[in-house]
Image 1 (cartoon, rainbow, N blue to C red):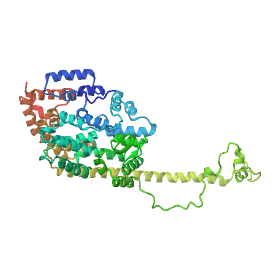
Image 2: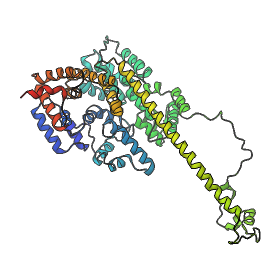
Image 3: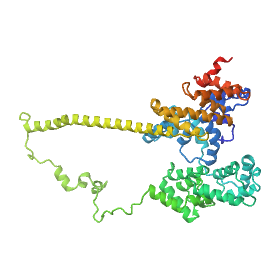
Image 4: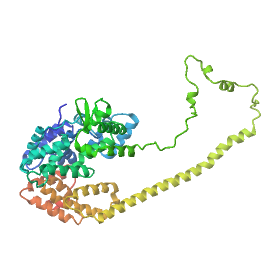
Length: 519
């Protein structure tokens, strides 16, 4: 199957089985009427597909294709908002029981289409990344980066980036994007020093926290928590390649996985670490520490004296098809197995023993006494568990309330905070603190103008429409909504958004109540 990453968004979603041909056609017709609107916005409004799913394919899909699959399938389906965390847990549990594939279970549950699973499996192909040449990087710069508009000698910057990354596509492009978006003031002749300083400080020293090093953290996660290989064997194989600098390619499972991760490269029949950045970060100290943390050595454990080993029961009699079962059984077993006559006095049915009757009643009496005790213990444990859950819930609510009381949000952080609070609101329902409810509505109003500046009017309106009518922030929400509604630039689109929200999402927008009195 051909890769889908070069297709327009509409065809990409259609090939993934997420929208129908008719849905795409209807959306394109509406886009022709409302030229300022994006296709994804129209599809989201018509409930054809979730907005977060569209954002995933627009913003993340190309990066994932470039990087290759380094996480299990469920990770990507959750990122695309096609499965939630609870559904993934259910699937993983069933996988343990019946050994079926992840996608098969997801389809059987009716949570996702087979066509969508096929699309992800086909496109998340398992093949090593192909290193970029300087010529390929120059073409990428002309198409995406345009470094020549910012720097006197952009070619020197590109070649230096390549020297650090070894041409690993995702890492190379991500560094290039930093230089394309940054305000670096690089004097002539200082290009190499600037690239070196960025790599050494931002990527190597701060790789665990830097935004630019996200791909490095992804490789680290997959190296230490691999879903295709045993992580211990993977680390040891990488350690061998790192120490030897050049190791013969043997085609084992671990070597293939390291190639897929882009952590090593193959040159003819020899393997080596892909680049200088990885050599610095995933060095011998890193590998040794991780092996010790995940798989502690047992050399200090007390040795067991094996000078007189005890055979297990299964080793006492070895199976020999030429020896009969009776001959194989030890002599003492045969003797004891024979019934000796008159060894036990016979007991007639007419003279039952009193002792036998008493003995039979003892277990019943014991059980009768134990049942109430068991019920008492069980009730106590249930009460204790319920009290613990209630206490944990109370602590969580108090902690959340303290967080909301001390909240100091800016427009840059508001969207992340909104997501966090909305998640807690769904979990806590009626127990969601009032202070957090107020903070959430404030954040929605803070986020809207910033989204408007970025031409994300649909998302801005969604946030404003979530502000309840009883909230003190409803007036502020109405101010922004009215401004867009009556503006020459966005009036037509805003009216369309509000109509679509009411029509397809079957809910009103409290902040837009002023439209009820307009024609």
